[in-house]
Image (cartoon, rainbow, N blue to C red; front, top):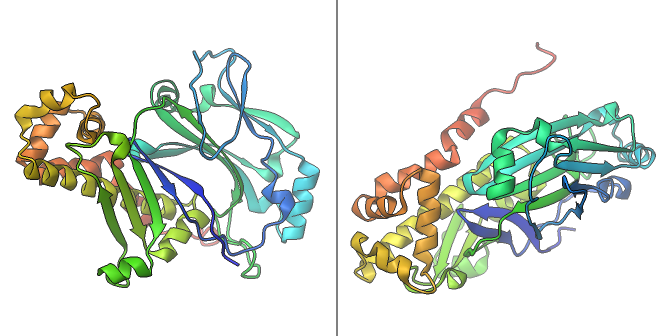
Length: 348
């Protein structure tokens, strides 16, 4: 039966995004497969190791060296793994180990390693991120915040009963690491749309409803809260197909909704309080800073503009400022990738 649980989902524009409730994955997964990544650790150049965690932020390493780099260290019992696959009705050719790196703030994600389970030759091995990852991954580890997610996932769609995972990209086991610098951030919570929201007037069939608490020109960022109510089926599917291209596109779409809503809220709060662009230095000098300062700095950095320039643009021409979000999140590219036809291997 579907259940409910706390779960980490990601970040948005410098915020902490989390789901308070999660619809359970509606299929059986053999325990040997679920636990196959239980002993995965992140190994630093100084020799220290860090266990996987869905929420804990791991401080960055002091430095990265080519001779002893940043590694994902795997200890996998291949005998148990293969027995679990057989019990699941799968073969080693049906699944792969996939390492994803994502910088959630920019909705930038990339698969940096993929190893078919059928090609595993040892129970213990390392993936050296320093040697294989693109430069933006290494920069994010040292100076921003990066998520590393290792999945045991379906490499292809197979025929099986509906209570067992059978669709390409569904994950059977995962281990997550969040590495980087801790920053003050506002809270974003994602919940499924329900009767309470429908009673408020949200129409049934709506995709989402955004609820923002706090005046961003007055309250500190720790008191500024956002709740995103999302269609319940989409809410569940985001977790079920987390590593798929479609899920990445849906997450980017959701982030677009949140960030657009935040910028429009900045404009409305500034209008309400008669705050003008000339007051940016005054806002920055307040202790603690009001939420708008951190938000604008984050947006401006991603838009490659000075904070005071972006703030002035937002108040003078909100639609132009808001249009930067689509570029930051690479929405067009994700839509194009999603719309490309999937080639049938047999037809080729």
